[in-house]
Length: 317
Image 1 (cartoon, rainbow, N blue to C red):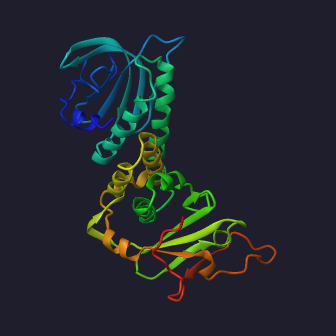
Image 2 (image 1 turned 180 degrees about the vertical axis):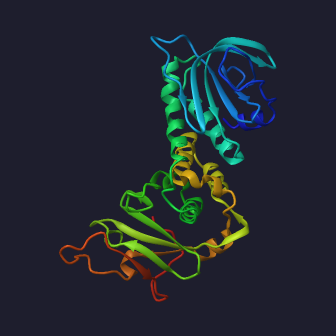
Image 3 (image 1 turned 90 degrees about the vertical axis):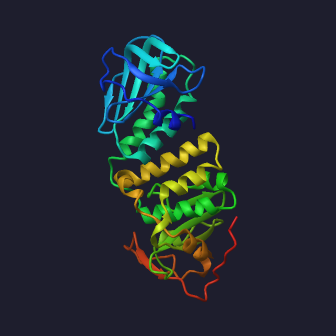
């Protein structure tokens, strides 16, 4: 998977951008692979997967704003090893953002691991559907702010057990807490003004019986010399298996949505975050009584965590 990135950078653009029966300049993704990477004249990455003839009809083509998929491409690949003729599935990422191209190549490389050497086109379509879901999300509004996602990634990157915490991480706003691991819940709250004043839903501050809830409070300030979400992501992925790395990247891209274009320029001070990251048990957080008056629901309020609260640097487990 990692070899796709330098291979793509070294490629000569192919002379066309369509799916007619003409050739691509391409490189094999691995020595014995029947999968290739190519580059369009616009610099877009193209994943080329050689397939067997289908059982029945080819899967339908797909054209999104940022991704196109075509099955049954009969053509040739001009490779350093010679000309390869066959029938291929073509997946083109139609973006120019360097960070998004890199994500596409990493995600695509992982998806190839789920395919046989010469897959049936429908098997390719099933795997590619995962990419389609991610790239469709990039056209939607973000589900969380970049600052909030950065804080969550920072906590994950610095956690004592990155694989365990990555499995517990969620980005779905419908879920109550940012991390859920067995009976442990952790809600990450960031502050841009160095004051531990955070917003909660009433339900968040009253976890179910038997659940241990901690608030991770961190100061987050923009800094041109800081790091961004993608750099934190790469740090996290270096400690994960291929499957877990794919899952974390997919979660982040789906959460960022259309804000992905802004993520490279949003850098935050990691040193300040490290110095300020503290944990407080929900029992030490000011909160309203659990039972609300009849007719009152969906209550949210700001809480100032007092200096007297039992803030700790030790990670909950």
